[in-house]
Image (cartoon, rainbow, N blue to C red; front, side):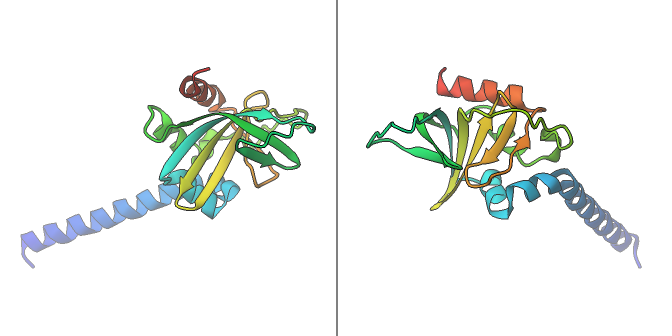
Length: 170
C-alpha cells in the first residue's frame, strides 16, 4: 500500500470518528429537552418557517370578544394582545437553540408552589403545523399550550424575558 492511500484511509477513519463523536455529543446535550417537548414540537422549535413572539392577556370569563386570536391553556383563554414575527430578529436563533438544550432547564429544581401567569409565548410554525411555547417569568416556567406539564427555565429566563420584551416593544 502506498503512503498516499494510507493517508487517505487515515483521514477517512478520523473523519468518521469525529462524525460519530459529534452525533453522540449532540444526543447527550439535547436528549431530555427533546423528550420533554416531544418529537413533533421539538422539530418545529428547531427548524421553523416562521416564529412569532406573542404577548398574552388572560381573558376574564365574562369577556366575549368576537375578534382576535386566542391561546387556550388548560381551561383558560388568553388573548393575543401583541404579536411580532421574529424569526430573523437578533437573538432568536440562540433562543430557539436554547429551547432544545438540556442545560437551559433546571431539571431538579422545580418550584411547586407557584401559580404561573402566561404573559408571553413563541409560536413556531412550519406549513400547517405549529407549536406555541408559553412562558411564565414569575415562576420561570415554560410549556406548550397543548401539554399540561411545565419545565423550569431558570437558567435562561432572564435573557429570554429581555428578548421578548424588547421585540414586543414593551
